[in-house]
Image (cartoon, rainbow, N blue to C red; front, side, top):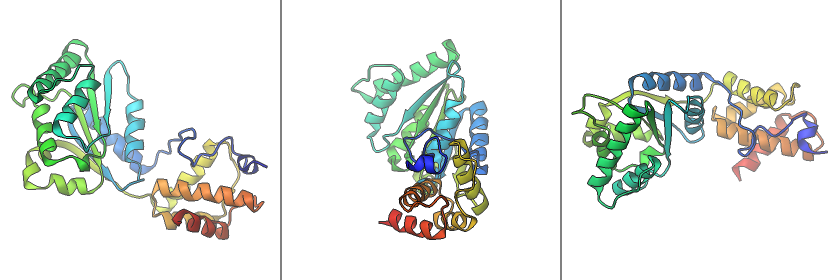
Length: 266
């Protein structure tokens, strides 16, 4: 018997390459509220959180919900680039041929953003992932790059996403000019025990399972171990399904969870 069939699943909702299921936790709703506000004001926003807490997932789902005729999404995941390389990457994303000189890329990027906003009536949304790896020089350049009309206008939405240490980096004296320009910020925490249980049940329901395949004790053990981290929750649940199937168990109990945790920690 296939393990998905054993647990009445149309697919495994806990693996990355499966169909994405969005569980609207209180953390996700708060991120969405902050980003919706940023959309109205434009300028810089900051979203931080530990690995696996859902930063990129939350931002991606929010971005995918926007009208593509009104917003241009630009995702920049390579935050370890030099300032010049970052400029070249952004120029490419805006549909331009990158220049070799920094000031030429600077002027072209600003001109492209102006045209996009004024002529096309489209707002650029620039998402800089893993921004905690950006150098101080790159962070300082961001403030200058998105300075329009002598700092009187914000024409784009710039989202800095990264680990919580990014807050400490921005609090450094050298980065004060950029920190002062951040319109809204939010740090994503782990889910509470109850929300973590709802997360697991919600994933299962969306995958076609309408029975309680995890015992209450098993759910409690998974949620306690994960400290509410969605990525860890999914890894443990996936391991539970595989181990449960191997042992011909139709219900995941605490013993199977213990085996799954041991497997995940290897």
